[in-house]
Length: 330
Image 1 (tube, rainbow, N blue to C red):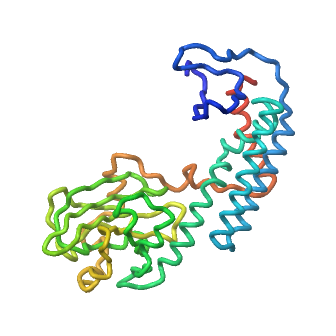
Image 2: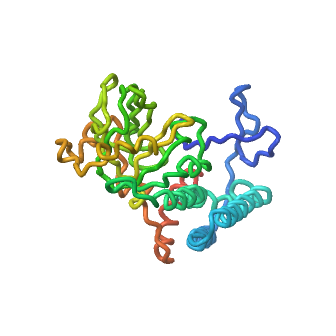
Image 3: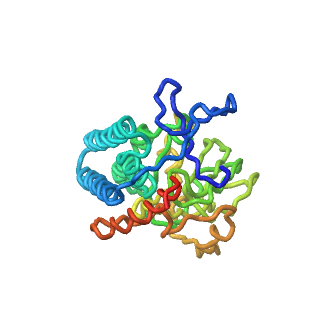
């Protein structure tokens, strides 16, 4: 705003504000007008405390890898609360320029806050995905045939496309053929190969006794809305999933009450040995045709966090300088 970085967040009106400047958008006036202050920042102290917390977060993530889902959640939640309390205490005692708040901002800028907060969801997904990839249903495809919807219970979105679903695992670029007869009603290319929602989504209205069906996490889809499709027809190929190289899969959703088992009677047509080459599909077509850029390795989502002290020095320095500049320090 006016050339300055502005941090926006939602806060309960009854919660005490620690910011030096508070502006009311509703009443178009300063509630607390900021004043220029001469603040001394102990850079070495901020660096050392930031490195300490980075080591703690790395340690938490390393230590929960062999724990059960419930135990891992408890440990991660414990340190999330510790970190939140650490910052709150600093704000209460020293305001927004307190060491604790500046350390928190360094951790947020270098991705360590997000790393800790997201690890719980990623860990649960991985644990469940390992369970889901237990039964071979044809070709290279594996899934937890009986418990697919149950395994999605911890990540419900309130629709059958997401909740009454099976994650069917296979390597990237494995051809996905149609499980049903029907008509294509919706195609959505997310333009991404990372995160929770990625790849292309395909919705098909069932015909000739087949149910509606939803596919996602595929790419190189050549279908158009209105196309008629038969069992065994080409849908696409399994997309890469950045950061989850061993867990690539096609997600298939069916209306509540339907089970994917009933569709496997046609497995001879569904699971073939054909590759994308057999369909004259270029493995890079999704990158050429996507309206949005595909996130590739080397992006911020895949930055390798070094654990050695020297690496942490460089990382803290790289984020501390712009942080202090944004706060008005040279």
